[in-house]
Length: 607
Image 1: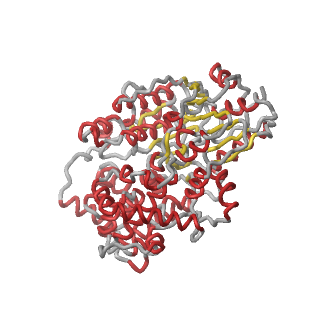
Image 2 (image 1 turned 30 degrees about the vertical axis):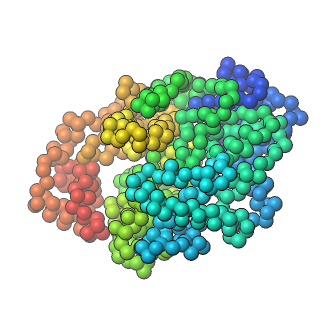
């Protein structure tokens, strides 16, 4: 067998590989099949070998999840001399069939809320901001329909996607109007009166019932496919190979479905990971076993055969943009020796909401500087309370994230973001970065030698609380299942070293040469210094503090704050003293100082 491709961010090691029995069974299979492949199991390599074993005269289509995966797959098939394989993403395939033929113009960034309100001349019935809330729901209704396999908007119940009670009440009141305006906006796109969106031409591609001239279709990352694209694939005469990992489904918020569960094909497994060791495999499995609380305990055993000892690429991974940005702020403000960092994806996206409102817009609204607000939607808001009311009625998570950051850091935000930008490496050469920051969604399919997880994921205690506090009939089991998947995906990005908050660790998991626990304490924000190479023994003594050790080191940490101490803290804060210096002055932890500053609202009051 030829050598595997050169090591990249998403590949298995570049060594001569002997196919496992599971891989051999897939390569030798016949007819429609689906492959459930655990993280790092070499599914792309397996698919390449599958294609290589087919006649060179066969026409093969490989559907990749996104552009970066597509470019990597093109190189892999090319290296194997497989010129009969055409590599596309769902959108690139649809684009060629729909946009070119209809001479459509595509609006790459989609429509903003205020633009939809203006295009449709929406009526808010005299209530403040109502037309913008309606426009927000129209945007989401269109995404719901375009990603579905339904033929008409009326075939869907948009209320099925709304979980917040306040938002549901609003949508129920305006449902007929929202549905009608959704259809009108789609009709405007269809006729070419306005620019179309990416979701629209994918939907039109599905509705056109295309016949694709291929003998084999290899459909990758199928656990996060849209129902529309699965419908296209299933209606082809070609032999179909559906590939994915049922436990890596993390795009339900984009109305993705798990195609592995929707197709009745013969199932094959890839249960051996060449990325990480057995102890990390056991930790990942322990996380998946939390699904027993959702009555869907996985019947799966992951074998970890990774032997990497490299510690070159180091990453911090968070569940949310907020969690990641807060951790990045912590690093750049406290790690004076950290000079080069990299954010997966466009760094600007971490300070902008999907529709274009920036963190600075929210800050200017909060500080009553309306003349500086650029985003039209935010400009319509009288104050932060009005914005938060809008967020509750639309479930706009990203705007909610920005409000939380603004409340916490206030006028310090511009200088902090500037420091992050100055530390960020230019271009896309992340190999030069000392530390990479990413959310789970942005690093899907990637791997790093060393990974630190931010403590913003779910854990078993949170799951139990939700199940005990909420009526089971009103629970969103799919969403809870996806929360577990997010932690599983994050854990399985690590090749060698994993630094994980103790709260996220499943019962029965032990520290090892590859797994390091980060002890989280209410008065201490623990940050593993993944920019330095420490020995395992150093990690245990320096990074994994016990409560006793914290009390011993910070003798004043648990004494109550008095009015005199609060006044002294306020004075030091206004003088611009650092968190580190204030912690040393009071004999407390930095986490304790931050907590008290937040309690006294010093950032909001004094900037």
